[in-house]
Amino acid sequence: MTQNHQDTICVQGGYTPGNGEPRQIPIVQSTTFRYESGEEMGKLFDLEAAGYFYTRLQNPTNDMVAAKIAQLEGGTAAMLTSSGQAANFFALFNLAGCGDHIVASSSIYGGTFNLISVTMARMGIETTFVSPDCTDEELNAAFRPNTKAVFGETIANPALTVLDIEQFARAAHAHGVPLVIDNTFATPVNCRPIEWGADIVTHSTTKYMDGHGTAVGGAIVDGGHFDWMAHKDRFPGLTTPDESYHGITYAEKFGMGGAFITKCTAQLMRDLGSIQSPQNAFYLNLGLESLHVRMQRHCENGQRVAEYLNGHEKVLHVSYCGLEGDKYHERAKKYLPHGSCGVVSFELPGRDAAERFMNALKLAAIETHVADARTCCLNPASTTHRQMNDQQLLAAGIPAGLVRMSCGLESADDLIADIAQALEKV
Ligand code: PLP
Picture 1 (cartoon, rainbow, N blue to C red):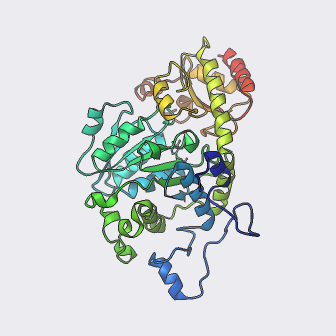
Picture 2: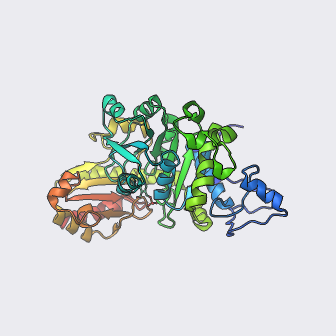
Picture 3: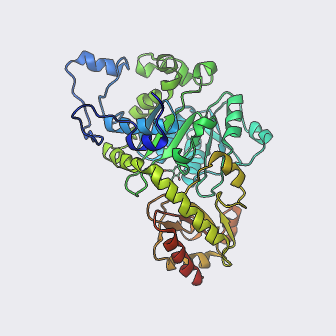
């Protein structure tokens, strides 16, 4: 059978009902599952048989949606988590433990930066941050003998840098470790990092995948290409017996295609319990059904808005890789040939100008959210970073007048008219 196109997978992937079964994926709103004998259930606990026993680890609704996301990313296995934060934490903690080290792009979502640089550091996992525009020499110099993973975002939130995925994959593989890519902003509709060499892909499904501001969630996808057994000593969690699962060696029993997600589910979900609720997985699936259609419009609106802002006398600078003069335009042509996302960042002359502009907007709402059907915006200086003065903001690379606008699915003409009247107040 030929592989379906992305559009078809968005609509029908992950679940094929049998005769007389529900056309829409069923929400299995049950914490537990009944078995006829203790022996049958014991096989599940031994990972000898596949099946469900407790929703803290796995649920059929989640697995149908995860299967769709795996197909979209071109992966071999996937799982849903309660949030994007949980997805990134699980993906990295499945590889690295106390005494280990990670190499990460410095241009990543602030929440992930905190997770890695503060919380995971407290757990004994150190990280070296490198510029997304580093040379091969700089990147290679960041590795240590105890490095276990490389991490970056396809399109970074909020800096909108575009990662050279092939460069980061080459370096990761030369040092015998997998590349983990957060593909939240691009979505698999616009970029499939596994095709460029990434090994594990993560998502905050809260963003475009859900797309309607409905359900917080995350996903982890395994590309199935990383040979754990070829790096046996580096990844003992995958390549030596897990005594908490009766001596199973994940890489031997589940192979390259299944070891990573099985370990992550069997160990981390079991112990840390950050699963997505089946109800949220259902909402996520509704979002996925139209992801391919929505992404196209988000990108068209982002492009139109970026072009308008770029020519405006009151706007000091616009970041959007779809713009010809953008620093990441050439890289975007390679990795994001059909569009990037709907998020545009631009600089107004100072904090007051940004506040006056945002307060005057009528369609776009002030929110910490991005990647929603409804246009929203944020001035980091007056919200998420308000504890910093203008000098501190500049040092952090966030001009006081920066506005991050997430273009929704409204008419681009209406969005531009709204922006135009708000800029008059600046
Ligand atoms: N990754 C990226 C790129 C994000 O933008 C976010 C949130 O904004 C996250 C991860 C965290 O996701 P969540 O808010 O679903 O925990």
